[in-house]
Image 1 (spheres, helix red, strand yellow):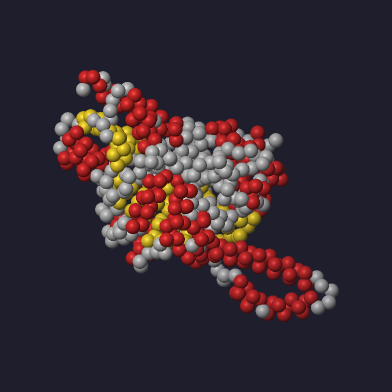
Image 2 (cartoon, rainbow, N blue to C red):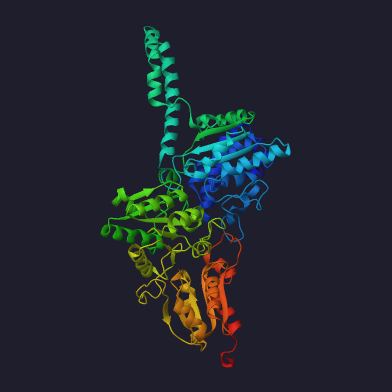
Length: 626
């Protein structure tokens, strides 16, 4: 086996080029075996094995810099840079990250996790190289899905302007997480058609000229009309050439010898080059090739039989959202759904099939999605933008400027709010309360369970103004389903009324809050348990009640402390005058939270029911001394 001898990129160069295909096969076997045990991104990584080997064979990392867009396809890069023995810790707490991390390895030149950033970052690295008088290569690897993001075009607009030496590898597999949409996907397909035309032309010429009789005459006749044929099916020049970027391709990204030849030529050029590479997502593992979306991100599975659907699994919040949207849209023809390349992940696949004219997949373009939604709302529709919390961050300006200033009826269904776990710091949805709750006109809500979530969606559709509803990843909570009172704007829900101690839970923290409440009751205390529901506007009657009637107030949320629900409540309490109240906010610290399972991270940062209870009893002391 060759893989066991590879501990650094220099070891790859010791192999003859004929051995690289064997190495690729071994890496694919390793990836399937390893990811089936840990979970992770599989299809995307299987697709770039050959490309990654060719890159490391031609370049000298870490002197040469690789910037992986999103970074979820960097597993082969990690294997080849001395980290294969750590793959049993992949995406586990304190283990190997699923994305490039500069603090994890000197071979990772830039941290990534979100889409469409690689070209901009690579230009910065290339400019820094030039200013420092160095000569290393900078290579950006960006997928065709990421090319739907606006930042990629802002970068392309700049890279060709001053002819910065840079290599951009466009990894075209016709997929992001789901199938790609939009004009760029169509354009890249036309470029592939161009190559097919050139290959066919060459073959036809050769065959005709070899005919014993009449071949030369037929060729000359076709040659006279070739311009008409060519212009009908292929662009005269690529868009990239017009931007000042030399375009090469498309080429087979699984042909390592061809890739090595092209990369070696490209690195000798002193101008920006874009190499269009065609790959197949899931390459080498038939289940992933057949169902790349299913194998985009997987949990543990049996590598021999592949991923088997778990029909016993409870509904997730995404499932509840998708089901409820079908009901809402059937009853209200003004309701539309928008996704940024995540129809399956957000639960909108069935909506897309049932209401295709009211479904819009805009690609990886959250900024556009929000302003597009504002236009729909201004035109009399009720757009619902379903988006992961971490990705909504990109559209802050559009939320504030295009939606909320005009007080437009746009609904933000914020999936994966709070801790998402294995994807780590780039994907944790622990900032959305902080960047949304201070925006005027925007109502920010969070449900304690699946039934309340459905009622909040109904409420948001009826409410005349912008509304954001945040909900977590995973199974939809069924806690206290019988206790779901009518929703009123800005009104909290008192679940149990006690004295002296108030537990104020926001959203998904109710599971932990209920456990803490029960433990305190068992210990002889009689606390009040409140479901806050709204971060903005906050319930003023609740705040006044807390200020006047409770000595100890404990807030709980799965957001960072600064600008979070607890911080906002504390600020509001000051306006009412604090009369000896003790306020403690349970939230994540103001830092980036690493990857790891939700329960482990909750425990580490003091948000598990046990840790919350211990802290509360430390603060309140002996109840008999109150």
